[in-house]
Image (tube, rainbow, N blue to C red; front, side, top):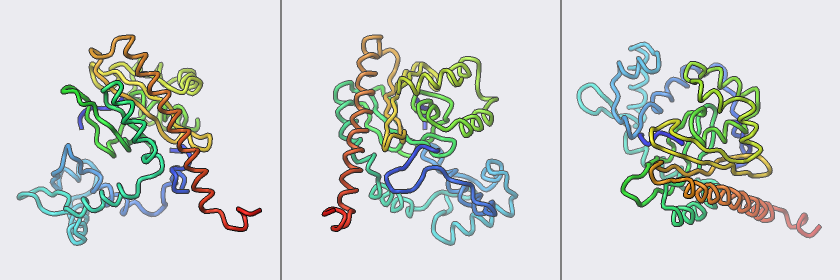
Length: 285
């Protein structure tokens, strides 16, 4: 699935495509935004030299970026030589939650039901460019459990959720991605990323993973569709010691049925929204 620490896939419910073309002439702006994206719950503080090393930016340029982000209230000093995000991001996170898509709205009750029956962590992820991102999760109540943050990125070549999303990515884009991470793929992973294996994932609509990312962790994920295109994956991650063959089969059945149910609810929700936005003339036609 993904570490416990911590893109052409159709419409996201907003009418905008998930496939994004890189904007020409925006290298400086892109690096400025990447400064913000360096910060996470796992690493909330960064110094200027650390940011320079990570983003391959000169010290003078980084100080200019930091000064601009401080000017607009997005960064503040944390100690003598480091910076952190300001509380403005709390409001931005709230705006992101309020703007949740139909997917997240209809998936939550399904995920909650699965968690109630198996008591393991249940996740929904979507793909954006070269990463899968957790967009919703319901955690197990057990003392030993995997914890994921919304927005947590996952490499596309490791784990069941990422592999489902990768399998449904158009071939030219998929091959380009795999070539870019070829040095990170070992023999076992290469077999599960072959065209034949990924075609089998598409045929079955789900896949499993055994200790691909974290030792001792098993995962399973299934495809969620909207308008006949895969837009997300529903998955479960659990410690192997709690998942014998019988329990794994139960979880696989729950995940596959849950993905189908979310797909059905998305279809009903899309139809309902279409009816609401139809003009009086079109409704009476």
